Structures are given as structure tokens and as C-alpha cells.
Image (cartoon, rainbow, N blue to C red; front, side, top):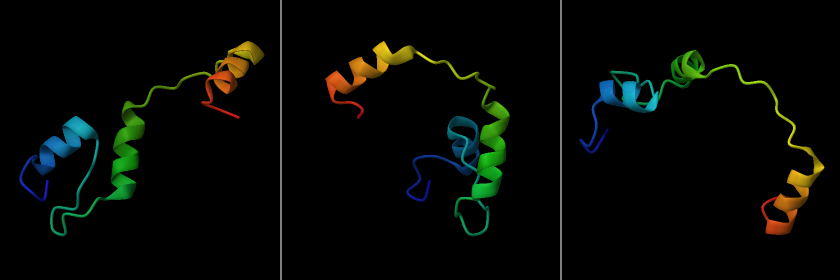
Length: 62
């Protein structure tokens, strides 16, 4: 935004980032509040030991 590629309004609507209009710094509390409104409640899904073993074999996890 500081370099003119995106407006403060588009930062908010496209990326969910709220800026302080005067300082142009990220308003972290307002950003979290905005994003949490879009974040659906997702139940935990356990993919089981086999999925974990595959991730370890691929080097993605320990």
C-alpha cells in the first residue's frame, strides 16, 4: 500500500488487513477481528497415524 500498488480499502477487502488511516500501520486488533468474522468454525479432523507417517516419510513433519 505504501508504494501505491493497493489502496487501504482494497487491503481490507481483499486481504483482511486493517490499517490505521493516519499512521498507515497495521491495526492488529482490528485485523484479527475482521479476519475472525470470515473464519468459519472448523471442527478438528484427525487423519490418523497413517497420515502422520506419510508426512514424516516425506520430510514434512517429525
